[in-house]
Length: 320
Image (tube, rainbow, N blue to C red; front, side, top):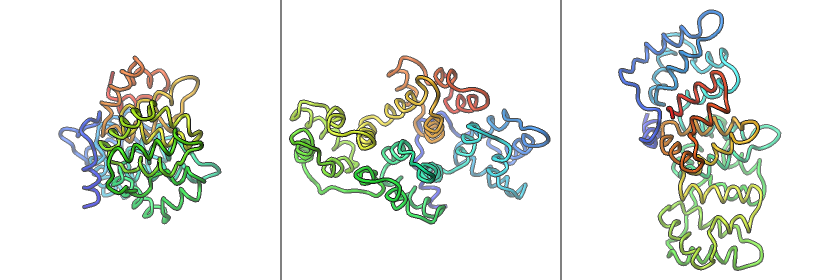
């Protein structure tokens, strides 16, 4: 219970999903049981319940369902639903770090590695959150997340993924800025280790000052330098760390936009962000999306998805 309380302390107050008034887990159980009775499934009822309950409330519904039915709610819903709609529903039933661990495991296992998932999750979570994810990952999969990542990625990319808390000796902003400059623009080749050491301090205010001083000395924005000095997944992960330090909600807005623009939709990215951020900062992500792209996130989702999948995402989005 202590662990769960700590997890819920990390949930923000800028989400589109908030505590349901007059919450009655037993009534929700009856609604969900009715939705799964007979031929077919009442998806609207599933959406009405799960998209309008907090993570904590959904856990209570799961417990009440187990007591009333003697079965696991996630397993029953999984057998009733399919496709992207099922992926969203199952994600909503998980605790936040369990969902992150689940996503990371799916990204790692199999023939290739979905590096976008590793970057999205590990570059945007705090060290405390990553440690919690690691604990749940080890409990669920009997392996260390760090070992799995290192076994499935190679080279500098695996070293930059902040699985564990990396610390930097107390140094002045000038020294950190000079390290980054000397690691990149001031020399042929790039010393990624120095970039990594400075960026993974995870002290946001300190790093924002470092970025300002870096621009004064180098004449370039830190993101521009990363693009000049690096490429591929390494460039992606460094840019993600910097963007999350500067404005995490803008980072997620950009990821959502890129998941839907053009032909086709990168559903894994869209689902992951909508599920993970709905209770934390979706209001601010929506505001950033509108500011950056001149269109609402709601309209993008509506135009790019369909069916019950669209309906549940729009509920998590919380309207225009």
